[in-house]
Length: 198
Image 1 (tube, rainbow, N blue to C red):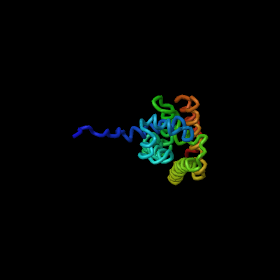
Image 2: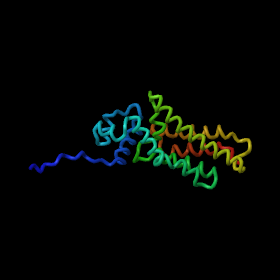
Image 3: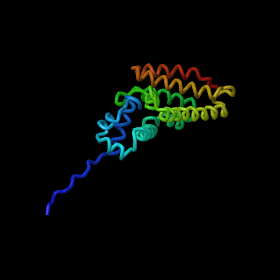
Image 4: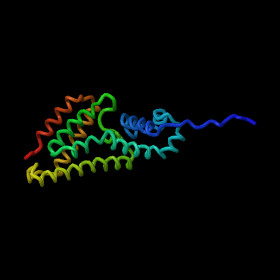
């Protein structure tokens, strides 16, 4: 009787594989990242990738969710953990300058960079929805600050929220173009000065 065992499929760490995919999408964007590049980075064959994650689009959706819980989480924390909106905004913009330029990860923001040259309407719409959700959440906080008197009664909450989004997106793009932390902190300082604090 033969004692030879059938080979077991190579095991992989799902969280590690997902992180490798996250970095690749962050560096290259959704459209430019191929299945071949993903399988190489994740250390698995295409059949295993499809079995584990479904499709490139489903893998990307999971990557974006992971990104939101980890690298992107500093934004919500900055705004929710500080006692005032002003301190929250100061922390948000200064931490963005630091996070977007860290040497141990791709520059900028995955949610912004992944949408560049993206021809998939579904992916583009999903990323736009995330950005819109961030703007709406910030608008609610600004409206609350108007109610408490931290901002003047005639402050324009929608415009201030959109302005902040534009600044953050611009900082992310500049980081990808090589701007360093000091340069982005200078932008943050100018942005904060433009707010109509009471």
